[in-house]
Image 1 (cartoon, rainbow, N blue to C red):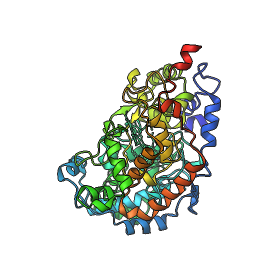
Image 2 (spheres, rainbow, N blue to C red; image 1 turned 135 degrees about the vertical axis):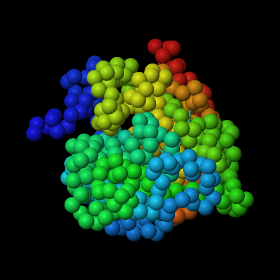
Image 3 (cartoon, protein in one colour; image 1 turned 180 degrees about the vertical axis):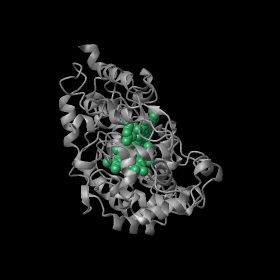
Image 4 (tube, rainbow, N blue to C red; image 1 turned 90 degrees about the vertical axis):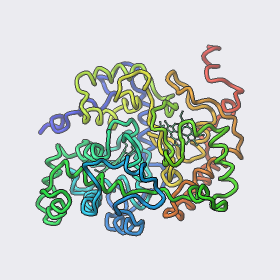
Length: 447
Ligand code: HEC
Ligand code: HEC
């Protein structure tokens, strides 16, 4: 079969290619993105294919983490929990068991090497520690793997919100050409249908044999047990004043005040993961993009085909990835806008942002402190913060206090590692911008 027939969206893949609109793509930026994909600063190395932790070790870790239990964990507001669970897919024990088996099953991918857990590695806080994900055939995508911890509290899934539920989300990576690469859902079902263990688990969970839709339902049921909301911060809020260090406590005050984080990352009982679930252009990697050329090119492609799999391919395989929410709404207000990411467990989920461009939480602070990367679509909530070095360190310390206690050891190690990296390099730091000694459009005025 010719390659293009096997991969119907292959021709969408390279907006940088011969067919690219002039200026739609910056080859240097693309090369840079590829280079960033194997950073020395974030060790991967788990021993399994794609540098991930072998599935047996991951299942052991899952047992240790005590996930996979139906119902709301202690301390979680029942209303918040119920809102996250669809009526027609209540997570029973049988569904969760099936979902976990599927989650760690590489046979679901076209070449038998990639499972959900390959990229969402339980040992590393359900991420891959890479700037962008690597799927079958060592293919690199364009986006950073977000953690699947607490994803159930997100109303829409993906950085651009293109999937409306965990059920819908789970089916997309299986058929994405560069992630798990199955030609269609049926192929994934066939890969496990002959296995008596799966046959039995499907019947116990949904009363029928293996099928694609129930695969998505079971995966979602398992993901709804990945609740990680017991951090030093929560213990502090419940009245244990010693649970957070004095630095983290100062950081919490700054987060709600001078640093203005709370404007987009509200974190409270009704919003437990610290996201307003809205889409903002905060100027991540904006300087590499020609948003105008990219958006006209993307509109032409979407007019031909705007199916969920077509949008998925554009988001993961082309420069149009950087258009973010625009790919879903085709509204210019959404150019370069991404969903406010949760900040739960952020201490152990480096690198950061939709493109994995920031290696440490100090980089994240440097980005916000200078008011983000200027561009025509920048969110009005972004402006220089004039935080001094001590204040930025306090906000960083606060963010490390948002990691669930089950990952306390990893969090400690990661804080030390990031501090060391940040001591040597602060590529996003710009004090002149942060303290308004230079304004974003100064260069333009003098030209
Ligand atoms: C090749 C690596 C890879 C594989 C395999 C993979 N994912 Fe992902 N996952 C990603 C990336 C990258 C994203 C973000 C893509 C985007 O937003 O455009 C993501 C996003 C998600 C999200 C959304 C989280 C959020 O914050 O919005 C969930 C949930 C998820 N994946 C679950 C799964 C499940 C379930 C499977 C298996 C069926 C799976 N993933 C397989 C890399 C992977
Ligand atoms: C205008 C809204 C807005 C404000 C203000 C804001 N954020 Fe964000 N935050 C976002 C969005 C949107 C993203 C995802 C952006 C992307 O990937 O392109 C994000 C991403 C992040 C991430 C990366 C998470 C990850 O897993 O990759 C961290 C950490 C973060 N924000 C912390 C902060 C802190 C700390 C502050 C205050 C200094 C802050 N944010 C202020 C909207 C905002």
